Length: 428
Ligand SMILES: [Zn+2]
Image (cartoon, rainbow, N blue to C red):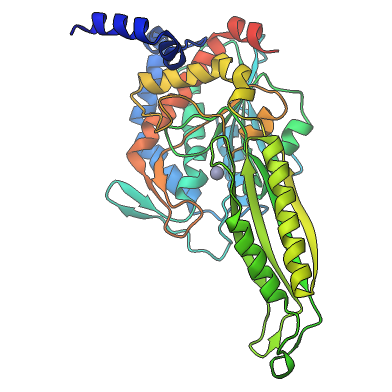
């Protein structure tokens, strides 16, 4: 059967299926952009300087950078941006904000890469090269993006990229503590037209925002020596019971449902006694605001019931509540914004597989872009390299993949700025 007849049959048999699968969205991408002499020269610059990009990536990854202790990375980023002639400011939460000095009439486009990592200062951050793989805590999340960002800035400057947009490049802080740096910057600056977070594995594109609720649940009791502990209320049982019940809760999975994880259990210091206080932490995420709140409420009820059953006290400490952006169905406007399809088209152009999500962008995300999504700013997150085991000591990244990642960021920046007129028509 020829392809044409096959397509025709599909259209006749299942017109809605075809529409669903192939719905066309506005894009600012055109392959002709990659042929523009300035863009070509920027891409060549990235290729030629790729070994240096990898060296810099390693250098950044070896700097301490636990959230709230990102200073060394910040100072480095600032120095590198200033060396490119950018005007750079550091705000009071430590975000390093670099702008190209020239004021342009077009939109303001923010590219943000968080500079913090989850690993404490004592961690050995020495990067091991293992063939095509780099191994070190934080090598993937998010040192790769910081190096990509610097590479793209240099390529744009070296090739004198023509653009109508005002680019703002931000190294954000405290992302791992709940996107605090990005939240702070958006609270204290005029709304940008577009926000692109550089974070996550290379491939998936996110245009939504998982709501993220972090909670500590405490259980307290009078305590006792082990010898006299028999039959006495113990916060340990209440906590264990509550955690068991949390994991027994039934709810739909992501991308439209939720995920709940107990990340920490703390308390007790000795063998020979009932502890007086324990707590566990809850990391609850969903793109659906209603589901997020109802699950949060259910977990509260489970905790209170377990404490009452055991005869101990309980209290709840809200560590952070980051709002949910909405489910896929609630975000059809965000999906229709040209930044999403443009990002998809650039990935396809470069042959970057956008992942198992059916070749489409996904309406979830746990990056700095969330802070834009919940403020109604057209926002996406795009990846940095192929890698894995993030937030563990065995984190790794496949270094050759950072080259297509950097090219993707460059082409995305060019396409978004080039489509100024189209963009300003669509942005509400
Ligand atoms: Zn990250």
